[in-house]
Image (cartoon, rainbow, N blue to C red; front, side):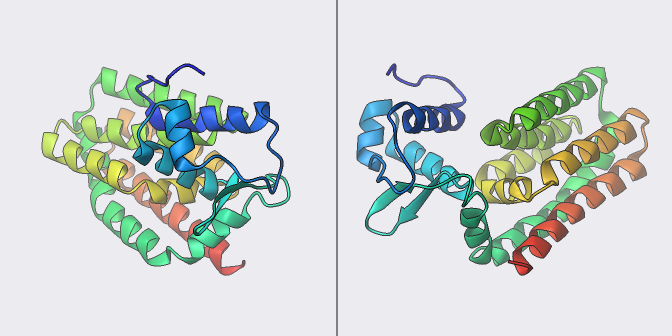
Length: 232
């Protein structure tokens, strides 16, 4: 296998690991390669491999057993269980992330409605188109990236470098919130419509409408995560 040099490193590693599982005949219950083995095979850092394995565990492709390593799961029978287990041990982190987002992102949307130019709006629309494409093919890593890119693009449209840097830092430092919300059944499709509503308000220079659309988007995602967790 050729070394991974794609700038979208985490997505490339996840894709490569999925290919390994399929092409090398791993079955549910089989022990997968260790982090050290994957680091050598893919020629990437151990930290990058660990992050990819963590995402694959959240999305139900592997289960990591303490002190034993990663094992292949039955993605049909156990598709949501790793996600459910993760939610149950991270409720406070999820709450903290959404509380901060509700303070910052709606105001960013309002400022974007005032400041965004045609290039900013076009970029957000292109990200939504990519989001829809990946949603149809169910490429989880690409869906998550599109969601992050949308919020970063919106922040950039505010023309406020401090606000952009803050939101970019948040989407980098707190990936779990995005993963959890987009893994909740039905949330991907709803996110597409909610992002489109935010863009419409920005295009119409409706700062209050953009702010309210962002609040609704974040509250819907948070409510569905908590509701999904409590019924399990």
